[in-house]
Image (cartoon, rainbow, N blue to C red; front, side):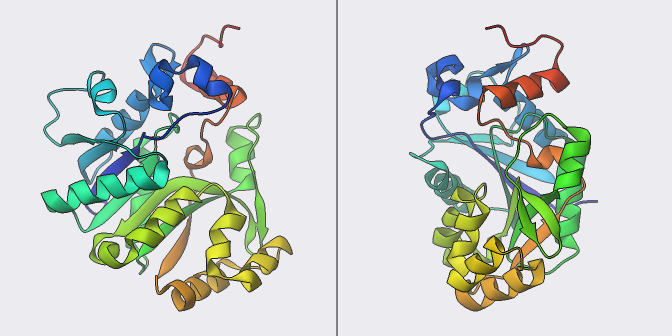
Length: 263
């Protein structure tokens, strides 16, 4: 059984770009996928996953609380910030006042393909290794095999070609001293170069040249940031699929419902 976690759904911040035109109140979590808003799929997967205790949604409280179950006594809402990092900090501070679990799982609202099995598997893999912060990675071939039409940003490491995943796990025992860095890691999770730039220019150069290994990045993170950061390679492609543009939404609708997006 997976270890117990509190989960944070990041649903705050201002939505820009082409998705804003179809998002109620400008919030991505309210975009309809079939008959349900995007946040419904993320919440449902979390609640069905073993080991998830509290779920805190950081975003526009009145809007989001109106569309999710009112009888879930372990579901909470807290105002989001101007960006994902601020929303993360708001949720962490809320959980600290409640007495948070030993581990905090953070995930964005724009991953409606996420499944309970993928969440449970990621948490189990984190449980098997020692670390303070766990960052999910998905191999390119895994993503392309399951979602061949999805366009992702990939980066080359010595260990393979990966895309950044959307599940992050933080050990609550180090939250106090890693909150600022945790915000930066959450905010940069989709940009590998920006992420490793926190570790120094040498690591960034090695990434650009495809000469960086996962183990080397982890060692550098410990030395520079004093954080035992660990990369967790997951076999679940849905962890690497998020909705950033209309074409992503079309892909998601293809797998979750029958009707295509109407122009």
